[in-house]
Image 1: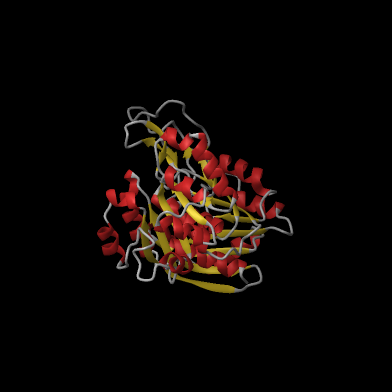
Image 2: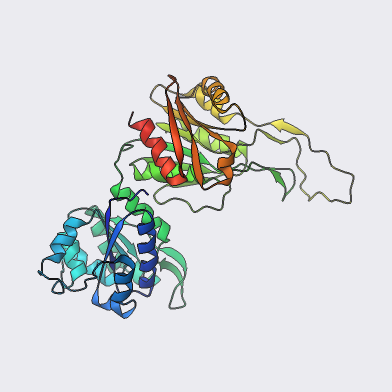
Length: 390
């Protein structure tokens, strides 16, 4: 529960996407946060105050005069560890950027002395209008954070940019505002997913990895202040907020992408499940069952981690992963030394099929830290904190 003991204030404005605020409240609560909601008067035309009172167990304010003292906009601004305006309408962006405090939400925004997270939602033409873009530019220049809207079919029936961003991305922006920045100034390269080695247009050899652990590591590394590049083999996962994503398919493609960014990186985290072998030949046509039983010969793929260890510079930290079915520690130690790693995370094979993760962090100097069984998001934070706060 990465948001345990954190106070999060959500501002709801008058957008058709206001109902998604309910989903955001629930997600933040599941992550351990205490949540309060404030609303603009127009937002209540879309979702009633009672809904958010029921979800949060807290009072919901829309006018600075609604509170008991008339100073709640000050008290709530001091209470909040993070303030999220989602959805943020063009009107609210314009008012806050102009210092207009005509309702409770806008008053809190002026009293809040840290970065506010804005997730705009509106018609495409309204979003791209020079006035809106100028307000966004102004607010960004003051240090506020924007989670850019998605593209797609809008409530008005038009297509384009303006849909409220994915709720998970808004949550990740909250993480960025509250987590300690122990990776600030570090360039972090993360690999994730299972490579695919095709022997015809639709069939391939691969591994069982879902990519979840690598994606969580990239997400947490960014939230901890890192400048993150995620090189990902195919997965069904959404790319984390704030992370530059480079998509690859095969081990050879991943090798090329990793080598391209290797000199750039201060930290390299190799979590991807790279296929050790690939088919020696490739059929441009789908192999048919009515033909003679095919024999697929294999040849080795490049060992990406070994090449990283060979090229590693003194100022780089390289972290590998070892998923083993037996002799987990012994095999991980061999890999640690052979690949010239700084750290290796050893774990059993069954973590591939679970939402949780457990294992052992082993350093080059022999230090070992047990990773308790926990969800992969929490495990990613645990691993990075233990390594970079040592």
